[in-house]
Length: 191
Picture 1 (cartoon, rainbow, N blue to C red):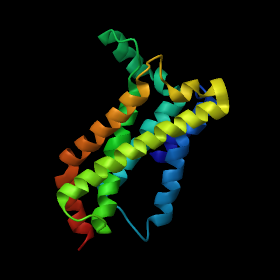
Picture 2: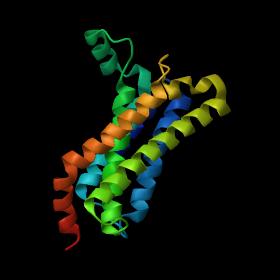
Picture 3: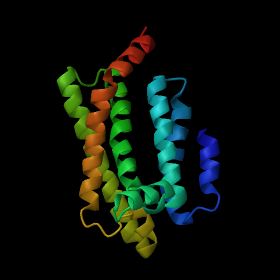
């Protein structure tokens, strides 16, 4: 599924530069997962969520986040002036790293206590989102106008802040909705 989506996304993308920027984290993540599979195998839930996030990145890379056709259609239906696929991507940027971080800190016993784990994970995900926004800004500065499709602000001056808010919401939602399922899978791995 990963390879076929990557291949599809690389065939005639809307903007080759943007495609490279968007799929780079997915490819890097896949390499890391392959390298650590024997020494630190993750739960099936986390692997599935990572795959979903990679697909989101690849679709965004193929069309650019501002021009994903399904979300253009939804914008027309709702009368919105923007394509909100970017918000789905940033929600996932909180939701999925929250579960990855949760798994690592629980298994490595980095943070004790469920409340402190929650605070640490949400803080980490928000910091990661802010760092990603800085990376987007640095890419824009380094490359000039070519980065507009990568930034995907669509003229919205609060795009950076709303992206981070979506990641924050995603992290909180992920922890609240997936903790039980994740705990069951962690119990199986820890046997």
